[in-house]
Image (cartoon, rainbow, N blue to C red; front, side, top):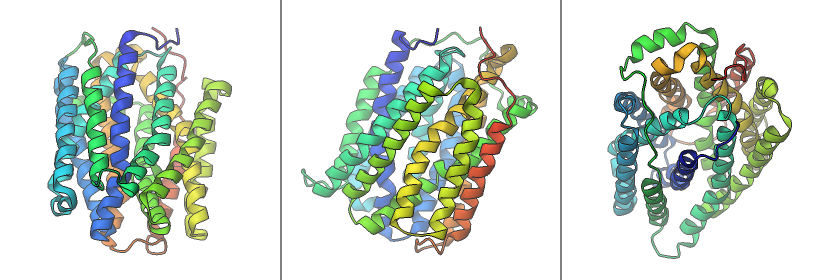
Length: 401
């Protein structure tokens, strides 16, 4: 059955939704916060690159304990320390700019604790017949969060009803991470194999042509639009608009297009069309990225933000479902599924995320003309990943168990 009505999945989805909301208000505005305090785009880039790298290595470290059946413990510890992290930001206020090395290190470690546990629980409690449904529902929730969190966060910062400035969103984040902590524990699945062997798994996984394509497409998506572009676009919008509320408003407007795309996929698109839709979406998104170089300005930023939110779910569903369904073939998932999450995270975050922002460490001032090579790189990466996904031969609905 294509059902996600089990108690475990409902708890997992509710807790994760709360986590996502608390995370979103921070992720949107932390880069504006750093940029406002430093007026230096390289500081934003370095902060995020450190976070990406530490997150990826920590993800690999904690995966061993998750595979031993300690997913709930690792996830709950991650959420607990995440609450502490938000409180530290609240206490530091503007002095946070003096700690732009240690803060992303701490954040990267605890962020990894949550995600390695969540990804594993997600995989363990879904299967090939309901994974698309869960993924689409999760993306719908994420889209709702994307619609509401930017406005809420922008309102709290701009109108500052409690006189706390950015401290308002740090406290809000603490509240939602606390909800996630107290609602998210679900039964552990019995593991067929507790041995942890990421190097061995990488060699095995890399031997599959289709799985290589999913991994490389993850890196290309991060280089193109999921890791660096959103940060650049958010700051561009802030430079033009001047307030966090207006930035939040437009980011929320962009999310409406994601809702439309998600509903369109669920109602009209068959599984066997996902890869073609991913390619078409990549073509449009690549052109929209390049458009901000050809016609720089507010309208191009609005078009890019809208197209990104529409294309992302259309591309992401094909990539993610392809990768996870390959894991279910021939008992593959029992021996390598946690290791695959680790490997995917390295390709997605450490490699793709770092490459997307690395060129920006050589710039202080942020304007489109300065970073033309970066924008071209993002456009080409986005286009290439569409062709890679479309060339995957694995049947998205073939494997049942």
